Image (cartoon, rainbow, N blue to C red; front, side, top):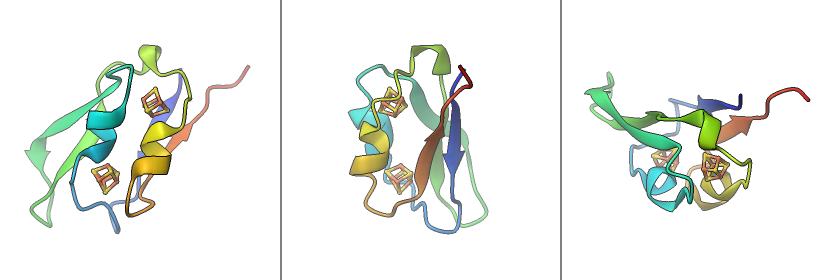
Length: 70
Ligand code: SF4
Ligand code: SF4
């Protein structure tokens, strides 16, 4: 299964990645981080099709999808 990777140094919690995911694989975290941001977290990565849209649309280059082996 693919994994979500977020660079907390750069993510500002705009949640564009959550909105643009066509598979609804991501969601907003229920928790606020130490900077006061609500970051994206995995919702259902079984749905992720590695389309890369979340990575392309992130204005801060803060998200990557680590593809599952095989
Ligand atoms: S689009 Fe980028 S900056 Fe915005 S919440 Fe997603 S990872 Fe963070
Ligand atoms: S790679 Fe595509 S399907 Fe997977 S989380 Fe990002 S936008 Fe959604």
